[in-house]
Amino acid sequence: MRHLSKQILGYGCLCAVLLGTAACAPHRIPPMTVEDLMEDRVSLDGIMMKCNQNPARLSDTQDCENARIAIERLMSQNADPSVEKKRQEQFERARERLRLAQERLRQEQEQQTKVDAYTLPVVPVNPSPAPNTTATPPSAEPAGASPPLAGTTTP
Image 1 (cartoon, one colour):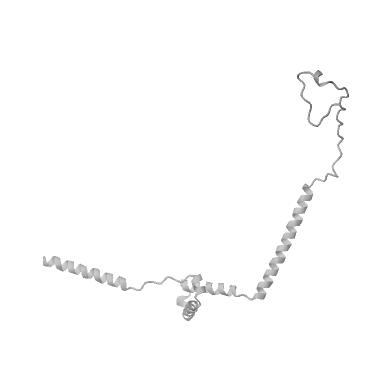
Image 2: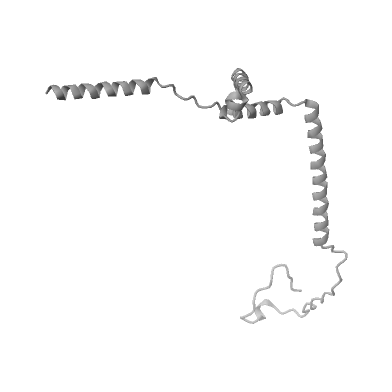
């Protein structure tokens, strides 16, 4: 029995040591996202300072890459307003030219498909037959005859 209790005690201590070392091991902190770094400028500056102090060792880490991307995005947001205004004006001019070109193309297509009634050839129309001038009383009409049409009068 002594031998069995020593084994149980040994296994228990071994498990306690393993759990203790696993719990005390430092957890790896996931890298901050680009959006997080853009919001937290202090962390962004700290990460960039670490990356610049030891570029050979830290240049390829995810934190350094995210920090560089965040700085590029922040710089593009804070661009010079006069440059942005010029870019917007160029865009508006290009859009107006495109609109005019599309309008011209649409008008040309309409001209090709449009039918001008004044340039069509004149086709003679056969005159309708003259109405019958001999009137018959309604009681004398044959039984199978159709009633008179609306809008026609009998003299």
